[in-house]
Amino acid sequence: MYGSSYIAFAPYGEYWRHARKLVTTHMLSVKKVQSFRSDRMEEVSMAMAKINEAATTSGTVDTSELLNSFSNDMASRIVSGKFFLKDGRSKLFRELINDTSRLLGGFNLEEYFPALGRAGVLKRAVCAKAERVRNRWADLLDKVIDDRVSKRKSAFDHKDGDFVDILLSVQPEYDLTREHMKALLTDVFFGATDTSANVLEFTLAELMRKPHFMGKLQDEVRSIIPGGQEIVSQSDMNNMVYLRAVIKKPLRLYPVAPLLAPHLAMADCTIHGYMVPAGTRVVINAWAVGRDSSSWEGAEEFIPERFTDKGTATNVNFKGNDFQFLPFGPGRRICPGINLGIANVEFMLANLVNHFDWELPVGVERKNIYMTEVFGLTVRRKEKLLLIPKSRM
Image (cartoon, rainbow, N blue to C red; front, side):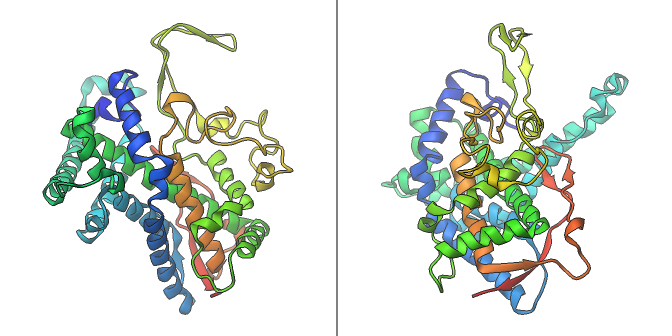
């Protein structure tokens, strides 16, 4: 939609360096992510209240929908504040994200059958659909930015604001156009929504398939949380070692972006005996890397213990330093939203397993919880995860 204005697709150069600096320094720094603690607490509290309503009647919860709603609402708040949710724009953003993901991740027959490409029928149809989606994005983002311009105070301090305020405040410093701003906001929306929701759903599904690990995780979380405390606080998270190990498993087997952002060889280079000419566009298959049996013992198995103190991968992390584990990519192009995404995932998962015990609907067996993935730009489960919550509060 905005071509090379996206951080992920911008060529290495002055714009990319400035955009990357803006995002990592002002929008997604550790300090900025910490400033969203109250927003996370409020969104998680609302999610727990919804689940509690179902628990009082032994009702079934569509956790897929719940987690997507949480992630989208959280992204909406950090991008444009609470008013964004009240105006109903959060739902529209979610629809646009889903439509865009399907469009970009769709199967293109013309790439495999050149004759179809010469006819141009499919290309025209795809381009028309892409243009409609682009126009919907442009209309919505323009309204969001225009509304914020009219509401801003003259002495506003961008350090305490949402992402729209930050972009408006640093616009002169970084020479940002309206198109640049819309591209950066779209980047954040995609990253903050898909990452958290998909990782949480895959994690919860794996835990339901293997109750032993669910019990072990609940024991850790509940041993740390003071009795009677309904919501896990951010300070409680520091000692949850097993929880972090559990989350690494779906990041390894079901990376949100199975194919990392393309890398361009700027000069001839040789990697492990392979000559890569300058100008070659290289795509890394993170999905295959995480399942490589030469790097992972029992590569297809759910073994959180491998990431704990006594495990074989205790020192392996997802910060791009270990090339057998690249859910967020490596090097200069590593996803800048790691801190935000992981903070949301850890906090929500801790509260889900602390506040509730979870059961399967009548007639559903654990072996029938399938982990089949949907083809698209990001990896997500094909089937909805329906569970029955039992409150312990």
